[in-house]
Length: 309
Ligand code: ZN
Image (cartoon, rainbow, N blue to C red; front, top):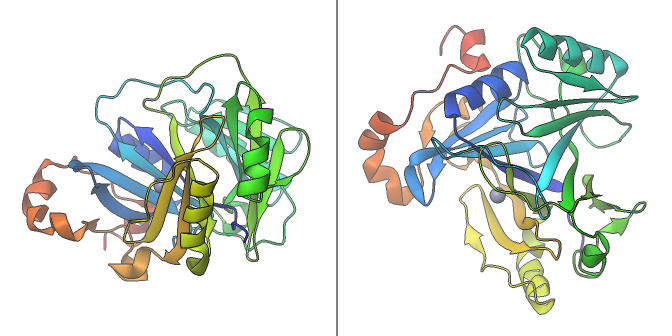
């Protein structure tokens, strides 16, 4: 049984309109689902990804309006790395981010930057045979677009405390000192640690959890296996777009295992993903009220491109 790499990464924002502006307009991702927090429907849960909302390129945000900035520390993901295809792509993003007033740091085959709330990102020039997961954007040619996740980097006091669980229970494959490859039949990605002696604090600009992708038929077996390893997973929870279990790995990072389907087109057509407010069935009766209290969001690139559909 193998996991198919990163399914999605979920982080926290205090500013939904600014978040849409950065991820949809500047980074050129598609807003593929505009929904609400299933525990508090008066605030958003926003999902960005490739054109089809595939697992492997999906970054999501819980909105906590007014939340203080957090700081990543032990047991938290502190950087999200995305694949790009060429040196030209790195140059394109260095220039585009500079023009937006975003500080960047260029490495050999990488470009580091942070979102407006301090969440760390890296664009990595990598060779892979995995399918590129790309969104259409009028200002971002597809040759230079983000192609989905390469990896996440997490802080830990000691990577060794997680090794047994990652390798024996989750079947991550070691790939260097504090790096593991998570690869299934369709695609894969990497999980990397950096050592720290600092504890962090959750808040705006920090990652809440990382989800790994499971084929539909393996999901219940993953729940059992994680339970047998003593990691106390939640029961399987139906998130409508996928099914999920949650647990902490030994370094403290909150993991989710999410099914690859049914996908974001389960409640709206593929062409209209993210354009309307999607509500879980239990909240549908509150739609009129929620549409009044939720902060209006800026038009995404799709609406700009089509003159406001
Ligand atoms: Zn999640």
